[in-house]
Structure formats: structure tokens, C-alpha cells
Image (cartoon, rainbow, N blue to C red; front, side, top):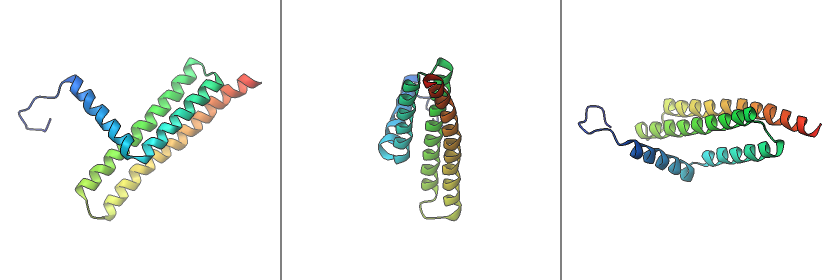
Length: 127
């Protein structure tokens, strides 16, 4: 809904449709989303091999979900910046770089959490 418009909000079902449409678009058009999904698949396979317990599964899935969400937010920020600044502007570039850096920092910490979580389960399983 556009602020100030007389139209009502879309239905709950329609809102989920828009979200799914956005996710599909991101998967089709953004390389980094595909990389994040590949990381998610890798984490799930590693978790299955390690035989994670429920708490560790919760940690792994939460970390994967947060990374995917951060990448989607980064993609939306980059799209908005491209919309409002079609020509190159140093501030537009800085905004996009900072948004990408936020995802990168998150990925570093999630990778560390994954190594600790899955690694400790693997050590416990094979020792």
C-alpha cells in the first residue's frame, strides 16, 4: 500500500505471494543468493553427516536463515540505490559497499559458528 492512498492492504495470502515472488526473483537474478543457498545445502549435508542434535540443528538453521535474510536485504538496498542513483555516485557506491560488507561480516561469524557447531559434533562422533 502506498502511504496516503485509499487502497486497502493486500490480503495475507497475497502478501505471501509477493514475498515468494521476490525470493524467486532474487534466486534467478542474484549470484550471491545462489552461493548462500549452496552454503545452506553444504551445512545441511555436514549436519547430517555429523548427526547434529536438536540444539545444534537450531543453531545451524538459524545461522543459515539469517545469512539468507541479510543477503536479501543487501540485494534490496542495492536495488533501491540503483533506482535513486542510476549514474555512478560515490555515496551510492559507498552505501552498496557497506551493505555488502555487513553480509560479509555476518558470513565470517556464521562460518565460525558453523565450524564450532558442526566441528564439535564431528569430533564427538568420531572420537
